Length: 401
Image (cartoon, rainbow, N blue to C red; front, side, top):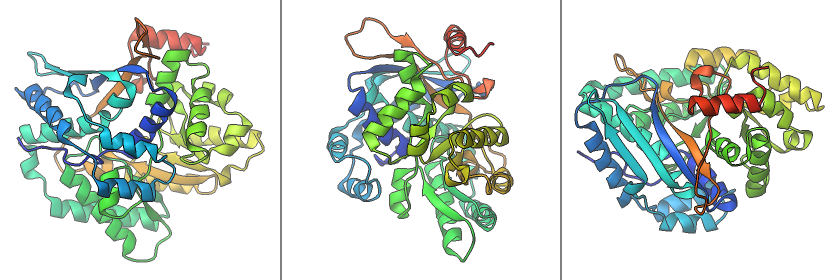
């Protein structure tokens, strides 16, 4: 089997920015993650063996000088010491345990130092997605010329509607070539003529380098969930904003607020942080309702929400983004992060619904036990974590009141 991931920066920017913040603030923290397949997919026989082999191949990846120079140029907010760390970083397949049961279902667990294992998530998900289509034979039917035209048309519609949007589709792409094709089409559409919108870039650092785009992204729920496991969910958002501000000094100022829902975040979102952060990212719940809550909160702090960015990334497609642009353009500065709709939208191909979520954390390796954590969000279907932990966190946050 050919190696699927061949570039160190074939990864989403937010994994690198979070890794830097973790080393800066929690250098000895240990974590456990687990793979979740929301479609309960039956994988082909031997899939686990091939996946183990692909993860082993990651050990050969080394960041290149070209990649470092690009990140230094575009990601000015990342401190220089972090590139020294990346130059010495090596993946270790021993951090990952892969099993496949008799029915074909996949089980994957991750454990290790947080600053090491944090760089596995996106690459492993991208491997699983592409490997699945290879081993089921669906990859043979992927028409990339037609896909370019199809994606170009999406880009034209978004640009003409005034949308500022980016690609965030690495994790569940049909293939490396699919994401390459989609990004090339969207850049070409953006360069083709005058329009009120813009293609803002891609979360994938390697493709941003290849096409001279801006790599985009800040953080994931993981960092708030880890802090909640260590210190409790009530103040996890506040602590996350504090460490993010200390690490990046006002840069990367979009906060992902919905790890434990709007209510507790809004209590943590004080005027100083509302002014410091450029905006918020909506990743669950009803987009219109969430935007109205955000605007109301800003106004309560005497901040004009029309001066703040709101990034929408909740499983959007082209039509939904255009409709939301019309609703939001007079209320805030809307931006759209679109993933699977860009990188896995082939006729007859069902995109995978797979994630890797943080389950437990301990602040140093010397602790004899882990503390469980979970993610709640605004969608009950996106809850992750065992039932007991979810119930305990909900009680702590008075979500049953």
